[in-house]
Image (cartoon, rainbow, N blue to C red; front, side):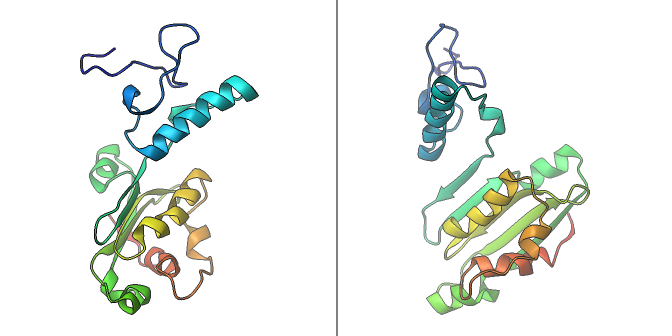
Length: 175
């Protein structure tokens, strides 16, 4: 255990005891239901399917089910700046998102930051109506290591919050 009482594990969630793994909140590798379940998936795939999965491949994402909800993934702007990357970012207030207006709740914003060189999405936050669902388009693109232009050129269903993601990505400026 570490000084704070968490069970120490390696990147495949094995403890220092052979044949013993620690998953979930006890290992300090993510204190969310979705990361705990992903811990299980990693251990099960490695043990039962001979995979080579690791928590190093996990992109941290979270949802706060507040009013309005928040969906967030990847790096914050401060983390991007500290990394020294040449980055681009765009932000759109929910007052400019038709679905939010239609729902009568235009509080919040959509924000996406990308690496200007690789064109990969580095992080995003969607605070507002549907933000906890719309963020998944960004999460999937990040896992695919696809350039942001995939989302930028996609046709999203109208009327949704997600349909504004291409518009936001069309407004990128230097961070």
